[in-house]
Length: 84
Image 1: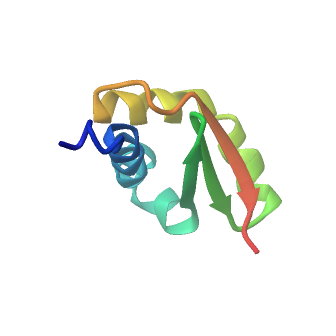
Image 2 (image 1 turned 90 degrees about the vertical axis):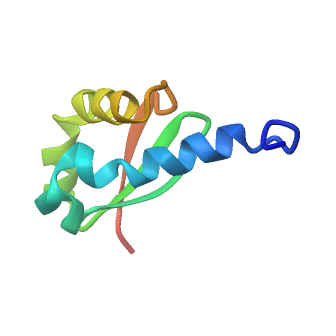
């Protein structure tokens, strides 16, 4: 039924967002927030350019951890956004 409704992709995206804290750790998760996934791009809000610079070095590892945690390649890219 889920497949019939076209929700399989949305469920995988939801699992990817839920895996954020486990993938980055509690301290980073407190400072950041996954906003949405669109076309394989996980958009994450960060509090400042300093945090964005720090996380930019970890992008590939974070993407790999999330995909491993959910068991499929849903996230292809991590996009860091300044929190508004």
